[in-house]
Length: 100
Image (tube, rainbow, N blue to C red):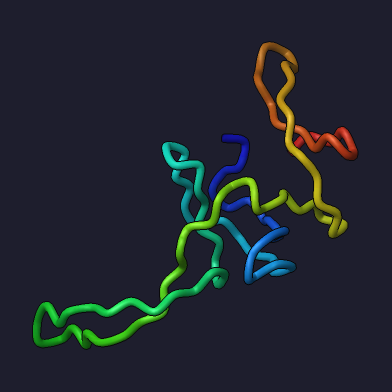
């Protein structure tokens, strides 16, 4: 998976199309990512102790990695590639060629 935690992405398909956010969790086994404040679903939580509130809370649901695109600083979306520089494997933006 070419996307990593803390990458800024734009959702390109689904109910939250056009939303940008930061990746908070990556699940490479299922090819899914969790984007901050996107694809929110309601979940019921059971009260665990005296301080815990419990009830209905909004949490981020996973999005398939194919439905998000890496976002460059100038606002363009791009694909991510790999190349070897000085013996190190580095990610780069395919649209601009810049190192990420």
